[in-house]
Length: 109
Image: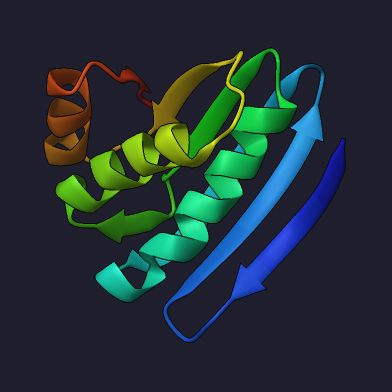
């Protein structure tokens, strides 16, 4: 497993791990509107590089569910090439419901 792309600020950290055809983007802390471009950039890069599954891990992160949906859709639009599946891991029921309504696969931890 390789870890890279660690970005942090006072509210949020983003870590990217690559292993066995899966790229996991872990968001820890509180996702807010000003953080959205950083999350979109990391997800878009993962979408372009991965031919397996990109997992957005929000188990240690919080935020408005609409921001999470916007991050996923924004990254898909920004990525020049997408050949991967996307799955979100979250324990938050409201976020899970919003993602499922948007057609995004959700995994409960």
